Every structure is written in C-alpha cells, then in structure tokens.
Length: 388
Ligand code: FNR
Image (cartoon, rainbow, N blue to C red; front, side, top):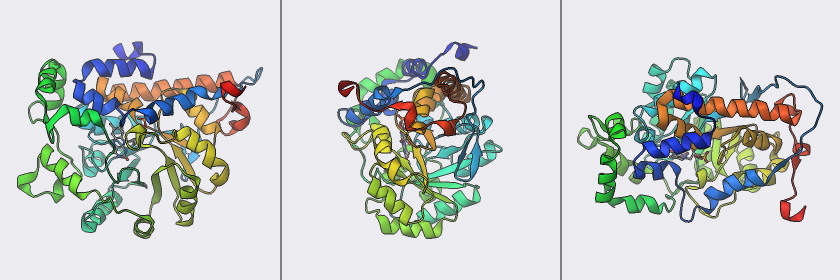
C-alpha cells in the first residue's frame, strides 16, 4: 500500500500537513509562543551522542519491558491528546485500535471526542488508560473516575501543566470569535474537500464524548462542549487535591507534566506509581526545559522509586533508546501517532508505531545492545559538542 512507502515519522508529518486545513495542522503541530520548548525537545535528542559497542551480535534484540506491573512488547504507549476528531473521523478509536493490535496501551484524554464507553465497546482487548483534567465540579470529576474504573482503565494520568491554557497564538489568529473560524480559514477549509468530507460531513465538528452527559441537552454541540471544558478546568489544583485523588483512585496513578526533581519527590511521598516527564509537547510554558534534559536531571535522584515515563519530541526509535538510557521506563507518543492517524486512520497510526519499533530494534542492534535493560548512561556521550 501507499503507507509502506512512508519511511519516517517526518514523511508522515509532511503528508498530514498536506491533507489538513491550516487551522487543524497548526492545532496538531504547533507550540506555544516562540516554540522554544517545542524546538528544544527535539534539539535535546539531537545533541545526545550514542556510544555504540562493536562486535556484539544481538539479532534480534529484545524490546520487551516491564511497566507498572505489566509486561509490554515495546517501551511505549499512545499518550493523551484532545480533539483528535479534528484530524480524522473517530480518530480516538483508530488510535486505540492501532495500539491494541500491537499490545500497547492507549491513553484517552478527558477532552477526547469518543467517550470512554465507546472505546471499550469498539476496541476489544484495549489496554485503556485515562488522562484527567481536574474539574471544578467534583461531582463531575468523581463521575468521570467512576466511568474510567468501570471501563477497565488500569492507569490514571493527572495532567498538571495545563491549569491555564498556554499562549497558542495560532489558535487566536485562526478564530475571529471563540471557535468561529476566520474567513481565510473557512476558504482554506474549502480547499481541502477530502478532509471536509471525511471529518465534517454530515454532522460538523465532533463533540467531546466524555463530557456530553454533563451538558444540558440544548448545549450538546462542539461549541457547547468547548465552552463547558473552558469553565470546568480547575486552575486551583494543588498537592492536596492530588492526595485526595490518590485516596479515591484504586488503580495506578501517574502525574503528568513533571520537570523538577523536587516534584518527583513529592509524587513519591504521596504514593504515586509514576510520573510523566513532560512539557505538554511545548504547548504550555514556552521556555520550559526539554523533557529529555529534565529526565537527565531527575532520574539519578528518583529512579527505581516510581515509574518514569517521558514524552515530547519522540520521532525516531533512537529517541526512545536515548530516553531509556537516561533512565525512562517508557515513552508516550503524541504527535508521531497523530500524524499517522491524520494520514490514514488506524493504518496510519499503526505505520507510525511500526516505524518507531523497527527503528528502535535496528538502533539497538547497531548499538551492540541485546536488550533494553542493558541501556544506561555508559551508552551515551553526555558532553555537549561545544565542550568535547
Ligand atoms: C496534547 N497533549 C495533551 N496532554 C494532555 O494531558 N491532555 C490533552 O488533552 C492533550 N491534548 C493534546 C493535543 C495535541 C494536538 C497535542 C499535540 C498534544 C500533550 C500530549 O499528551 C504530550 O504531552 C505531547 O504531545 C508530547 O509531545 P510530542 O510527542 O507531541 O512532541
């Protein structure tokens, strides 16, 4: 098929850019303000050198790993992203299918288009995780948690780096009123009839499935659910609320959006099962340190006391290898699989996962590393080029 002729995440990204209208592409690919952090996430991987060992036959290398009491075929999962339905119809379901077919977890966002219950009924065997945005109305939050439990979610991620929305200037440029596309963008949408038919026809933009039950019947629309979530996101979230969440949620609990070693220590003190070292893919605080740099600084202090996941800028198998060598247990994928789903639904997302898996295996081989747990700081050349 056509997908077999795509050889990298970068090529998938280029196809996604051509398929999507500009406003949807910017939503997918953009970062906050000057995109310093977006760029820095990638630069950190590029700056890290690999010290390969030679004459170590290890074909095929093992990519199996332990994560949160589970055994995974690869050290990765699809991370939570909101409003995927803007990229492809039922994208949440397609992403869950691609992950499940490869034995990998799928994390559904609070602001997904498909509801928890839909994922479970449409994707048999899914290893479903749920990402929570704390809600002002605790009744709603508790109901969401109960639904996540009933849906069989093993793992809950509380996102802590989006208490206020990052400064995404493209978003403000693309809309004249809240959620009303500018004329230029409406014209651009008309130039993408394939997307228009696939995503918008015949019901318009999709609603936020998890939140629909909490909206009055008359306000159940794409616009209504956006307004609702804007009002509901709890900007007063603190460590006490996390402690209460720990008491309420019986499954695995991870804090997403940690960059500082002291915050990792607090997470351990509260009995959390892990953290996701993340700057929200450069979409929140611009200027934030890259997630890879944050991992390098905090892993030596906390490693072994809770699970360390990382996201931000994973575009090659060797990026996953570098994160593992610095102490991460696994990575979450954001844009890499979104590019895939935007191009070709579950096949496209699956292609993204397969490319990363192939690249990871090849890189391990070339490193002379027979298994993931042999990766450590001795595999890396830590000094920046300028000092070498
Ligand atoms: C996100 N991210 C995100 N995170 C979260 O906790 N809840 C959410 O709803 C979303 N929504 C979202 C939408 C889009 C379009 C993107 C690109 C990202 C952040 C996401 O979970 C992850 O931290 C980053 O995407 C990781 O960076 P990369 O892999 O995209 O570079």
